[in-house]
Image (tube, rainbow, N blue to C red):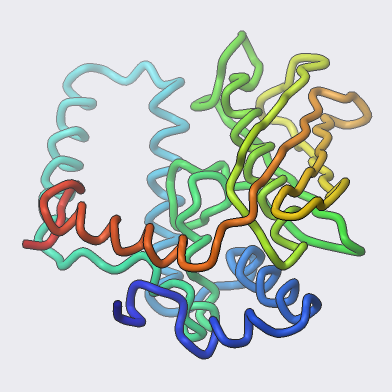
Length: 254
């Protein structure tokens, strides 16, 4: 397995060091998308932001059919053009060079990724053992009138809790996520998340998170995460590459 699709070996070896060093490395990766980007990462973010604006305005615009038809044709043409380029290896984004340019794997996250037009995006930061996050969800995420769809509330919790549990130094995958919706979560409004690890028992990590709009509690969640076994991440990367190489992914290289 090449270093292009897995964390570089020097990074893997450093991740075996002290808990404080592990926390620093995870924090560096989770928060890389909040540093100014340069080079190709800056252009990826610019294109994603332009697409984000199109998505937001399309959901509320009453543009005529002719204009929409022309826009769709141009976008279809560009999508076809993008498919002519080689498919990049997403997990090369763990490299130090990607992080130095302000990008990396997490820049493609559907929740925090500034290079992913599906992301609001959510800004995250860790301080004194807790994770704080902020986001504004636009019209594309609407569920009840003027309110954030409950599914996106749950997804946002999963992401923010995921960052919090990674600070243990032995992060895992979501085993269970329980959300209690206290009041409607408004769109176009600054939202605040606060997450922390409640307990660690063997491979089981329990973390909690709250969501506020101003002083109003909108929802709260508790997540159970199971630390992944050694070699699991690498196996998933290999399986992903095999699936895409056999035509399992859109625009796969052949």
